[in-house]
Structure formats: C-alpha cells, structure tokens
Image (cartoon, rainbow, N blue to C red; front, side, top):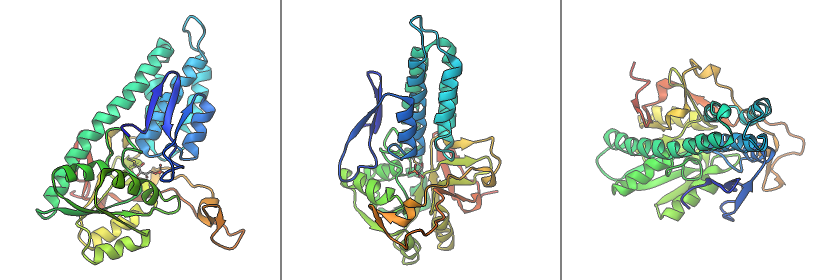
Length: 333
Ligand code: MRU
C-alpha cells in the first residue's frame, strides 16, 4: 500500500484503520459529514493524515457549495471547515491544513482542491526528509551496531504520507542495515501499536515484538532498548510535545535509563502560537473505549473512565525533535 489516503474522482479514498489488521478495506468519503465522522471515529488517524483528510474535506465542501460559474459560497464552506477543524482538537496539523486550503477559497473549488493535494504531496516530502534525518540522529546517539528501537502508537504509512515519521526512521534504519528489532507497544485503549504498527512491520518483513504498554519501562531497564522514537500531534514553541497517551511515561522511563528519546514529525506539527505544553488542548474520548474491548465489558458495567487520547512530554525529557527543517534539541538549553 503506497498511500493510506488519496483523492479519486470527487471522493476522499481512505484505508479504514478501524478494520485492520483483519481487513484492508478502502472507504470513499464524498460528504463533509462523512469526513468528520471518519476523523472522529479514527477511521483516518495520525496527525498528518488527519490534516490531509481535513484539507480534502474542505475541498469537498467547496465543490458542493460552488455555483455553475465556479463561485463559492464562502460562508457555507467556512462553517464546514470549522466543523472539520473541531473534530479532533489536539493534532495541530488539522487546523493548519484547513486554514491553508481556506486561503484559496476566492479562487474557486478547483484551486482549493489543488491546495489540498499540495498539502498531501508536501507531507510526503517532509516525512521522507524528516525520517532520513531522524535515522541519522538515532545512529549518532546510539552504539554503532544494529539498533533495538521502541516505538509507540502508529506513525507509519497509515498515519502519514511518505512512509511515516518515527516508523519512517525505523524503515530508514532498516535500509541502512542498522535495525535489529522494533519493540512496538500495544497502545491502549485503541491498540494502534498492536493493530497497525505490527501490521506495517509485518508487511515490510521487519523484525519486531509486541509488548503491553506497561512492559515498556521494564524492557528499557532490562537493556533491550537502544532508543525510543515516537511521533507527535502538537509541538509547542518550547518543545513540549503532545503525542499518544503513554508517551510521557515512556519519556520518563527513557530518561531514567539514559536512553535517547527522539520525536519525529513534519514541521506542520509545530505550533509556535502555543508557548508550552499547558496550552495544548487534550482530547478526552468516550469511556466506552476503556471499559469495553472488542464489544465486551472489561470492568464492572457503569464504571466511569479517565480517557485522554494524548499526553504532553516536557521538552527536558526529549533528546531531539526532528523535522524536515532540521534537528532541535529542546533539552540542551
Ligand atoms: O489518536 P491517534 O491514533 O490519531 O494518535 C496518533 C498519534 O498519537 C501519533 O503518534 C501522532 O499522530 C503522530 S502520527 C505520525
């Protein structure tokens, strides 16, 4: 699979990430309602792919709200754009991509679509560059031998264009002949690691093991991990980084065990308007994701849950943040 998301003849075509690994199924989204629903339900997920989906959703809206002469009802499209941008609050790529394509509204629906497709191809190039650079950072931070890398959530072809961010760096290490093993965390509660990262690693034939989230610090303490590499949903101006819930605990364990902790993301994930982690909105999701698994109760019926989708890793725990624009070491102040 080259792309998890694309545009085809008036529709957004997306891999249904809720169906993996059992089934590789593609959906065609043709309305803004379908786009918003797909983003909310994590049919499409991963900050860059969420952003591109949002951009293409605005393109759909512009087509629907254009008259035969190509004039767009801008107010109607801006209302749709707001709904799309609000559908997941933490990943800044979504707001960034929606705002970027809205600038082309006065030029008509075709111009909006051209801009949305440019968001997609730019992401492809950005991630290829960032991943290559991150692999070099990992090699310089670690012993000169094939590496054992721990990663969290899914940051691969399903989550981005261009082969992934953190998982793109893992792929680059493999191409260099410098990958011994990937340890993938399950990533409770929605199992993006177990369902999606393991699926990608298996498709690529890369050596890997799966561990429950709570085993990751033990793997580090046991000397099984040379580096931790993760993606990001929003990087504040001071380097504090929001990513999938559980990332902060991994960063604490990595720091305690003196293991490099590297964040890889396209520059569209950096949010200069948010000074620090305290200003990052954290999406809280339905309790059902925690109290049920595969349709079955895992606890006493009626139990309330704390279910933040993301947490914030303070900049001082991060060895390097790698984007297509360069390497930033926010802890080296
Ligand atoms: O809730 P998700 O699955 O969209 O969360 C995804 C993550 O946290 C990823 O690590 C992040 O978006 C980076 S994807 C390159």
